[in-house]
Image (cartoon, rainbow, N blue to C red; front, top):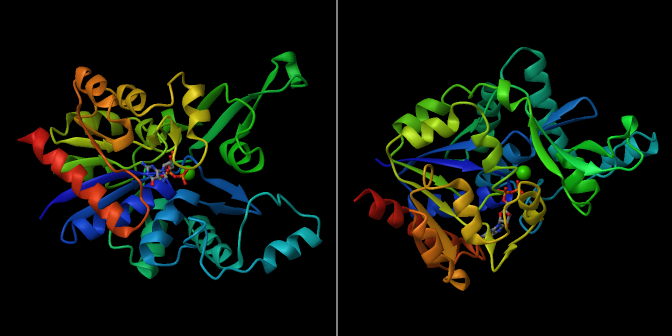
Length: 324
Ligand code: GDP
Ligand code: CA
């Protein structure tokens, strides 16, 4: 049986995983999920990326939106607003609230996030082993310009969700900092899964605030580089732009061009063995290969389940090629 480890953010990671499950129904898939997007709201711990993966694979996702629950209602949010209690910019529905209540209750009772995630997955049966990257608190913050900032620095740090959701990433990001990552330990099972993997995949997730944050947990990058198994990624950048979202803002903050080739070079040949770019980016292949990473141009739009399954199959084929 093939053991596959996938480093996943939210929507891009979750949709890719649906395709991977279709392509490799017998594989044992371990997902290492990003928790840098986590936020405390109304006293509750919300883990947007873990939940997006769990709901998507468990059949509870709001399909068109790509996040949150299907058949959702917003009564609690309206009632909170009637009390004047915010923030109102983060969309939490009634069904979703229940997940965060269960999670927060278990954490208050002393369970680590990894155990809580496992418990939540008992209901959703995602068909993969979903592990948070760490049980420790990591929060991605974004540095933005603010002429009125206290202390005259001219900048202020905002939580990633505030930057992404409330500010819609309109202000340039000057830096992206995964607060707490340097002190975090990989969650139980993370290094073991990497060590036992036959292949490691980077789905088309955000290279900075999803995959980048997971790689910032001490030990994870090293474990992947030292695993001695093929590491293959799929570009989230197509034709010089993110397929959805504002990943270009995050890439600019770390000085990486928004191209399929630049993202591969950013990961580097020390980490990546293979890289898939979209057919429209075929000119990137030579540049990526010159950097020592095997590269193929194939359709990379996750427009439906079959197209996504073909992408996953191509990634596994490239993995077999680089290891053979
Ligand atoms: P988030 O946490 O919800 O932002 O999700 P991820 O980090 O997993 O994925 C976001 C990335 O997925 C974005 O940078 C998008 O460009 C990329 N993405 C979304 N849909 C597609 C697609 O159909 N094809 C490709 N190649 N990338 C995609
Ligand atoms: Ca995310």
